[in-house]
Image 1 (tube, rainbow, N blue to C red):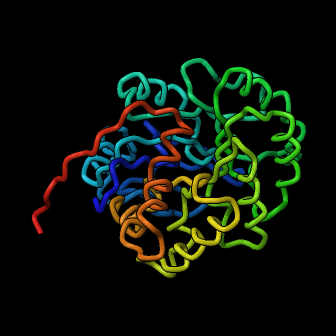
Image 2 (cartoon, rainbow, N blue to C red):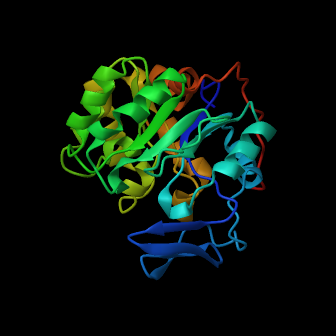
Length: 294
């Protein structure tokens, strides 16, 4: 793979049964990869996934073909709480998965058996993140990490800095590349100037979907982010399976491999080295190439 030894996906989703909410409306499987979403049918997965099950085994087939060694599973309210399923996945495939429990604005969020806690900050009923200091301190004490998707732009970045200052050893992964296509996204990237804060690119191809492959503006955004916080604080993520309705899993990573605008050292850091350190994966070996029929 052009000098890349291993790849880690820092942002993707799994569910055994989708049963979530968004905007006060249910999100449920409708068949053929579609789900109810804000009162209408939306393609949530590739159409050939006709049973609504977004399983670890299907993901692993995609990962093996794309030669992605390991991944970190995050969560979202729209999919429903997947804590129980993810615990089983983590136990079954310990060398390939890191998993988050889902924080749902109640005191009994899960920690046992999980690597991190996911906070959907942009969807909280109370978006004042400073009130989450006890939660952040607890996660820091347990030596876990926080996976967090912030509201667009800089709405919550000052609150995040408040929390970072008070939890200096807490590992934090800011999702969706700071919502890079919205005004003020650079303020989220600047958070990664703090020692234990990283930015992951889950949803990057979704945000630049209208431009489509090979997503030149997405590459330009990666270059801008490198200029802000350095390449060592950036991690690649696919946002599987939602982004796979337009591109393949391999394409979600391949546009990074193929661009001449990133050096080999930058690609290595972005595609795997940084995530290996952040998520604390053990030794990883290059996966064998699987030839296709073409």
